[in-house]
Picture 1 (tube, rainbow, N blue to C red):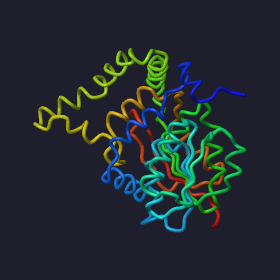
Picture 2 (picture 1 turned 120 degrees about the vertical axis):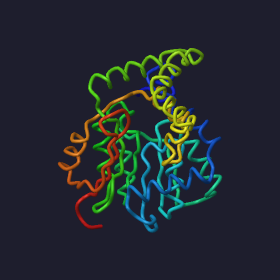
Picture 3 (picture 1 turned 60 degrees about the horizontal axis):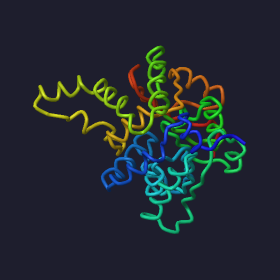
Picture 4 (picture 1 turned 90 degrees about the vertical axis):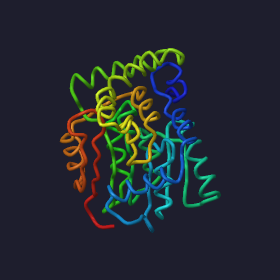
Length: 278
């Protein structure tokens, strides 16, 4: 038997994503949910998800599962971290109690047998998740297998910045190996490194902290929770956009939408369509 997510967290080998998401739920409101829905509509280029099945791989807070359900989809959410599973269950309790069209499991993107048993879905969604599994390419392959013919795959994967990415991997490893009370020694320098230029420009334009307030806003996320997720997000793998494109084209997918981070820090977002009719 392999180690559980909680054992990996205790050993400093994995970030406590679920704990971070539990804190995010205290900030969740109607505005954030609406923005999550809008981001799904925009990237999937659809008005709603009525009549569609939606698989959320690594559901995290459950926000985007909730967004998909509110857009009309039949939703199946799962996460490796039991605290993330609890977050999604809490959102279902709040907004869709006793709903038979929203199922939530504890499961792994690396468990090919588990995914095969779920069947295939019209939309498979995994934003910023598969690069944290510790085996990104097998996870990407497993996600592909869950997409129905004619269905869509919406993923976001960290951009490969070469040596810069290597340095960030070391930062993240250090953060997770530190005792909780000392992690500010990593968090604060990263906060300054990422935001000092933008913050200075905001003050010069007499718009203090405008960049900070907008961070993650288009997806309904929290700037602080996103920062903690970035600093602690480990395991950590990256890929160039063309590597992801080639990987899925060879598996019978066609790229229908791409939003890159411009070669810098962050995720490249991809929407692929699986060839073949539904």
